[in-house]
Length: 173
Image (cartoon, rainbow, N blue to C red; front, side):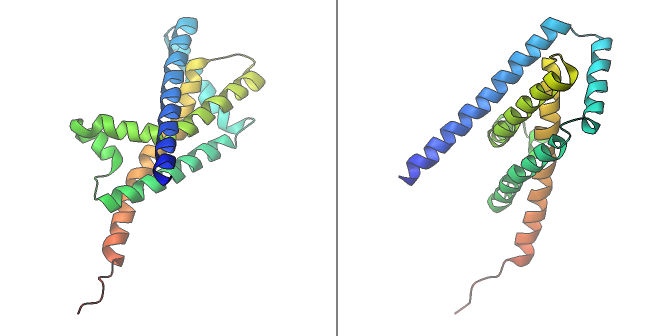
């Protein structure tokens, strides 16, 4: 029974991660098709992104990184227990494990990214009265995946230090 629950959770996490990746890819293609790629578009995107934390629904600028922190906490402690190198370091320096580790990150943040896409769609509809699909992806990644990248490595290092300094050997006989 427990194995089925773990497998079902794993399958649902994979489905959610793939859904998030597919939706982001579709939104990027839509954004390029609708608005193209130009310096004006880039300026508009960064202007809108910078304006969002001070506008309505600003709570998501705390909520999504907090959720990313919780996912990173779980995964970072697990990395330390398994003796793995910090997450972002592995992505940058180990081509053999890069794809696997990025996949792990999307499995852990898939729900957060989908939540971010949905929240940004609501924000755009209510505040901007328009739809910028590429911006949705950028905001979701900036608020969910980037904090996860940063927190997971830091947590791994802290947890590794904690385990080294607080491990007590069992009684000797």
